Length: 284
Ligand code: FAD
Image (cartoon, rainbow, N blue to C red; front, side, top):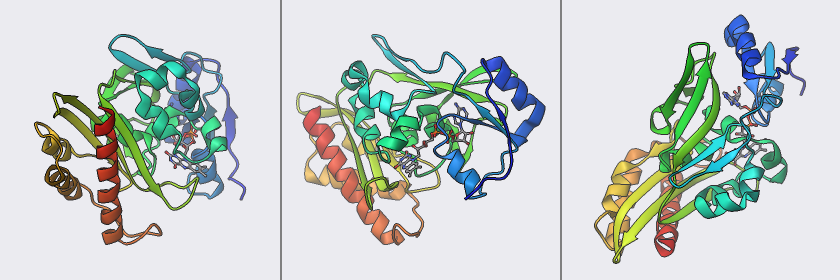
């Protein structure tokens, strides 16, 4: 498959990126790793007359961890996340999730910024970022702004990012307690049939907080506040876990596709969430 003809730009700084975006409006699109955008251009599902490669723009490739916060630049790849020892200690759910994305070739190129900005309901990082209560940093002609991950996703491929804005990085509070990223897929390299991101804190055998987000079970990631709330103040007996699963099922809205009918997806979502809750609890 060959994409339609396009102009290729490789600016050295953000000012150069924003200038092309301003000149060409929604005829221009930034490219990070290109592992979602280029396939869509080749399939003629994305028409991009002006393609702006972000690879030479500095300042978006660092991972910073301080006492309270983790900051990850938009151009950090999934492979960078897997290899970053301090991040693996500070926020191990990221590594666990990144290892379940696609295959090594894709992970060497696919970036955190591209994964969260794309708005593909199948991408793993948007739900993960909601679970971690992340904030996305954007810059555009009108300056910089931050958008909570919980408010970023509007519909499939529709986000709060304006056409002339670039996502520069994500940040989130240092996660506490136990974690699990659980994903069911048809085969290695596939997007999720269902995935669950869970962070849980425990004190004296009781759950003190729980954050739960689901992937590829609606046209946006689903942060299930009710599922998390069902666990808090309990010791996570079987009835409580079932209540959390029921609350999550009320929040998702899967559609039938080549990953299965709705009833099957709901069944898988429940199984995946139970496994994630149990693993996060055992690590808390
Ligand atoms: P690109 O392809 O460069 O860009 C994607 C979109 O985001 C474009 O619209 C682009 O304009 C926009 N964009 C990119 N960066 C920015 C930015 N900084 N600011 C604003 N907009 C930006 N992903 C998963 O999560 N889970 C999977 O299981 C999975 N499986 C895959 C399997 C295959 C075979 C392939 C090819 C990809 C798979 N992916 C999967 C997607 C992969 O992780 C992508 O690379 C990633 O989602 C997008 O990152 P990218 O850097 O390649 O973005």
